[in-house]
Image (cartoon, rainbow, N blue to C red; front, side):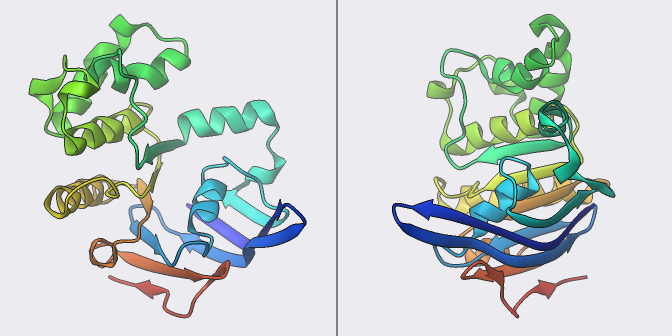
Length: 227
């Protein structure tokens, strides 16, 4: 699904140049649950941003389903992010004045749909993540685990082939985090959708199909693939 070849990215911080990614090459297959681990500053989040076209490399190639993302104009990149990628964030990023099902429906609203037309699919997805009875609750009425399930349902509403999760269990207790990882695994293994997560939790990473360890902007030798 995804192919990166010699992808590099540098940032300027004051007068210092920081290399976030240093000639990273990587393939991610469809239907796999992949975790990216490593110390702070290793390049994990930068790599995730590249996969989701939230940032662009200084050099190298990123192909999604055979198409070079670097050739997309701004409109095509926006379409790519809306329809091909679902994002899950550590802090949920739910709208506090909207109910759970309305939060799930937001990407469809941005695509020109109405709340009425989006509601059936939003309710279906909330049922699939175990929150059918919380559809009308606002984020303040939900636990951290429930909010993250809403965020996962929202990431799925456009039926994207790629889900990117940045520290999805970072604000959850260990039991709830493990349940969320199980849910993400089900999503990855339910078809041709790929799920890529950044995590500091090595126990959580060990449950995924593949663990990619990063160090100083490079992929370390401990890039482990599991059958």
